[in-house]
Image (cartoon, rainbow, N blue to C red; front, top):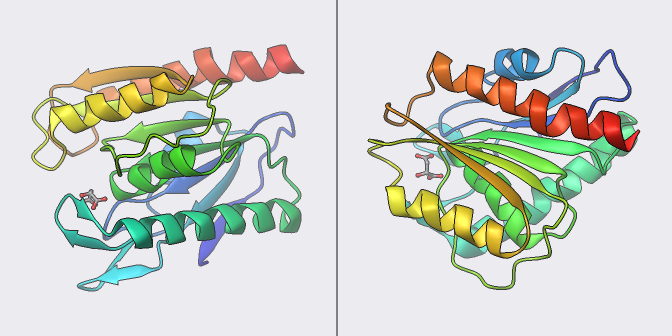
Length: 209
Ligand code: MLT
C-alpha cells in the first residue's frame, strides 16, 4: 500500500497508524499525528479504493451504505500491511494505535470489530458503526476515543452511539466526546484528543514498561 513511515525518536512510544478520510491521502494526518505525539512512529497509509478520483479505504454502495464484503476484505489487507510494515520498519506490532478520520476511522473501527489484537487502541474521529456484527473479538485491553460532531450531516448520532455500545459490549474502554461542529475537525477537538492520548495511552505505556 502507498504509505509514509516516519520513525519516532522514543522507542517506548507506540506507532500511530494514520488513516485519512475520503479524498485524502497519506499526507493529510501527518501534522495531527505529530501534534498527538511528536516522539511516536507515524505510519500513514493511502486507501486503495478510488471513488470519483478520491482515495478511500473500502467501497460504498451509496453515502453511509457500505459494501460489507469489500470492507472486510480491505480490513484484512490493511491488517496484513501493518503486520508487514512492523517487520520492515522494526516497530512493536502489539503497540499500534489507529488515528482515523471519517472513512479512515470507519476502517479502523472495523479492524477492532473483525480482527483480534489488531490494535492496542484507536482514536476514531467522526466514525460510524461500519457494520452490524455480534462476532466481535474480545477487546478488554483496548482503549478507544470516539470524537463526533453533534450536527454532523454525514454521521447520524445513533450510529456514533451504536459504535460505542458495540465496542463497550465486547470489553473495550471507550470514551466519547461531542463537539458543536459538523463533520469537520476543529482545533478544540484536536486539543481534547491530545489530552486524552496523554492521559489514557502514554501513562498506560509508561506503566506497562
Ligand atoms: C464513509 O464512507 O466511510 C463515510 O460515509 C464517511 C465518508 O464520507 O467517507
